[in-house]
Length: 398
Image (cartoon, rainbow, N blue to C red; front, side):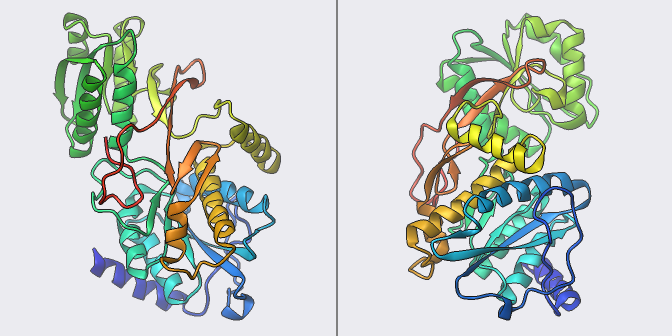
């Protein structure tokens, strides 16, 4: 992996050694980078430079929402905090596995940034994590890691979104505590990440008082679910957990409804929600209906500034900006102390539109459900286990 990153860095630096492009707009419509280079002479010691590593093409909408949220947070403080002027260097790539990592390496080599935010896609995250550690720059991550993310932490990496298996465990804990819905039937996709999610769900569901009444492994890229779903009523299930995504999730929801099971069994987890065509229950890191002063302020300000409702990605971008601002305020802009900016970020605590955030970690998830209800907020759930000593600033996995 390191060899691939270095090769990509060399190629990219060769093409861009004359300067580092700056996007003229952080948010809204995707615009091309300006040709004007950001030189060292254009900056002062009071500048803190944020490298925003996103992606274009099919990822442009997500990228622009992350950028919009960040832009709103910075605008609320006139792009300054702790006596430091906040400058954003936005670089959009192609979303490939090593693209953001190459850009991070190049920005660091040019001395152009002090902190990184990105990527916009999961595929880039492993390489970007490694690059951030190599160049020793803090990295705020606005996308979720998969269930098979590295267990070894990095003091430079701050994950704004819990990993998939952690979310699955929290969903299991919430579902197992419901007065109704104590008997779960589980369908397991044939891949390692999904099996890790299932293990986390089952462990926490049973710990909360629930019972797993059946489990079936489902293989193939276009599975037929009817035979599996026929067993739901036979085993007395009132809950189904099935961590499928994409086309299989939609097929599962269609078969589920055609068999009339939606009136008797509740779907929880990744296969639930409007994207899958299901009325089930799932956990999300941002619920637009969260009735808190912080979220009400965020929604109103975002819609006024950008003319559209905020997405989860926008809320994450906003929280990323808030993290940086709060760290600078706490240190009065003096980021050169022991541990640098990473140590400051690890101590940051604030409440954003998604809920309480401590050291970059979101301390609650929202439980939502109901396709027709438009993601009605059903409850909130917070981690119950403390972080182990070797987990850096991240909480323990479920």
